[in-house]
Length: 51
Image 1 (cartoon, helix red, strand yellow):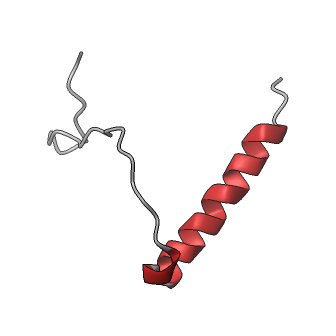
Image 2 (image 1 turned 180 degrees about the horizontal axis):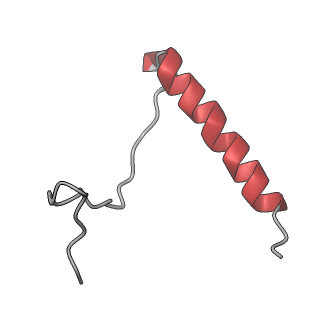
Image 3 (image 1 turned 90 degrees about the vertical axis):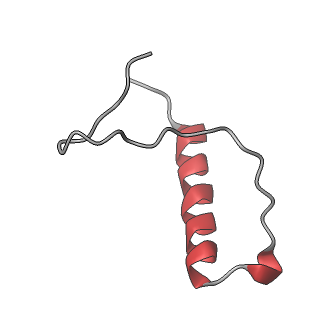
């Protein structure tokens, strides 16, 4: 696997698959907006038929 670097030559972080529990009672406005955007993206992806 090649290492990914940005324009400055620094190594970029890699994503890890993690289970994260979402606690709505501890969520702030940014968390709720992110949740709403993720749900909208999931709906669009489910409706996508390809080209």
